[in-house]
Length: 324
Image 1 (tube, one colour):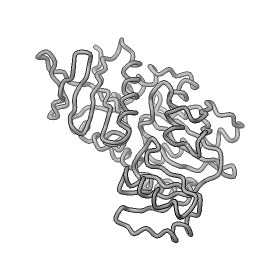
Image 2: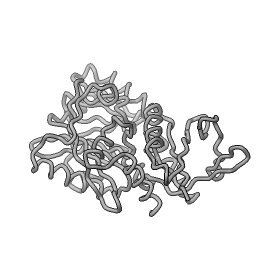
Image 3: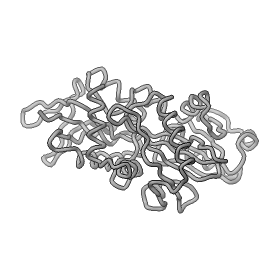
Image 4: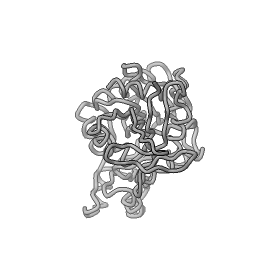
């Protein structure tokens, strides 16, 4: 019997529109002989299933909906929500209480990886190279002199809990700092200020594939803009070279660090992490546990380079979720 799959998409953050595209791609590529997918929109105002016939509200008591007098429940949830409440894990305890398996890592692991400051702190304790960083809460007094002394310029100002490069600025002078901080606080009440690492940038997908941790072919990112911002990610303002044109030693070094990060953080499901090569060493930047899943996104590019089509990639994610 075909499994009924709730592909949750949308969310409560600036990334909602990107999430809708990812969710649509998942639905279009799930093997028809195995699954019946449903587009489940999670928005601040309503939860509902949408199909060609209309919209149907979700009953939050058991995560079901009713169509033509028939109640429909789900066998599994495919998490395609970038940002909150999917990528940060906020919605996942709800599914776990209801006993509905999902394609993400456990909610506490999702919450950890969505928090840049906490992820960096954990990985540093295991010896993973990271750049210098400075954390600020919205209630803190901004000390520009201390930031300049500890981090230096140029530097990056980022929301601590956001994705798709929303709210990120590259700052060259102390005069630019206040505007960048205000921009980041628009996305999150916590921000992180990081040193600029001068080196080649790489993106690495790591998944649980047929029960084993698998590192996908590495992508080198060459942005046409000053850094890998929203335009570079989604509007074609970058080169994404998969597999990256690097020697075998560099490839192995990056892959080993990426696998260690995945295992140290005790992750499951799909992930994509970013690294900068500095003096022959990959420095960890951040990790995305619900990366973009459209045909043009980096993670699907990496899967195809590994010989894994989207239908097989998404099928594997569901199979791993169902097996627990």
